[in-house]
Length: 254
Image 1 (cartoon, rainbow, N blue to C red):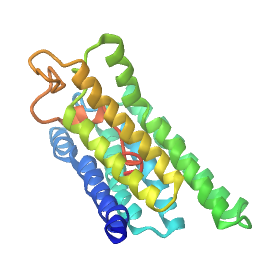
Image 2: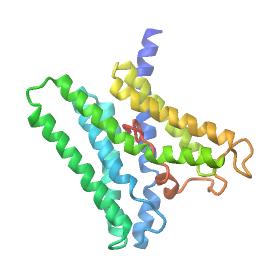
Image 3: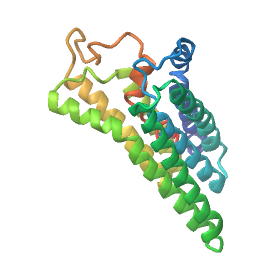
């Protein structure tokens, strides 16, 4: 029984989190490549991607301090997606428009924060213990996630106010829940609360979204399918309007 618990918490859970996180990261690629082919951004929202970039980069740094391959490879693809989509989104944004200005501000601000973290951990706190440095990086990761969770938390607030869950999509909410629960389980197995806490929050947010879909079903979706005006499968615009990550994709996905 102990061996089965070990295998589930230390191997199966992070593998499941790795798979779901990267499916969520790459689910928007086809639609975004189509927008690139057309040469226009359309209704696609590229603003979450600078946050995804910073989120994944910070969790990669954290994985180096705890020597964890699962965490590294769960976030490395997401970081590449974040870099690429930020560049493409910026290139397709109208010159002088609000979207382009926002991408500039978010990207420069987040990269600046990463540089400040690197300066502190690598030079200022050079003589501090590895535990201190690990905690500093972990707290930074959690701080970025507060930004990462801002959009879905705003969506939840709107659903509660309007008593209408048409803006939520059940498969995405379910994926957020499983992804967060998987990484929270892994964090618990490692006795790492900096990894456990944000992913537990992501799992709770996914569970709350699913509960809201059941509580406020949209017209034409008895039982709470969510998304009255949604398609059978989510578009990139749907995914980008509701970003949550393990620890991402949703946070660390983290």
